[in-house]
Image (cartoon, rainbow, N blue to C red; front, side, top):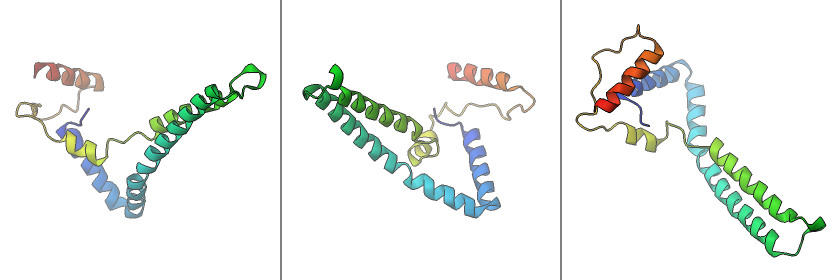
Length: 136
């Protein structure tokens, strides 16, 4: 779900404050975020292919010590590890694709109150947002 305009502004303010407070840390986070997303995707695909090959190969080969297809079990575990890695390395909300897709709304999409009521509780604000979505 894309961020609202208010949430996007708040995130930008937090980001700029982080860059102002600790530019060395911010640059290191920025470096790892850009390159870290490509390597796990390729690794997930590679592990998935190897896992499927081991799973099918274990069933096709006549290598079953004790009557159990151990090679197929290893293939399943490799595919499971690929799935876990894929879930852990899911793209963050701050990725360029999420950033460009979240900012554009239709003409009626920007209907918010003039000022967010900071005195309201969290649940009251969430209920208000939920009602506004169905009114649109």
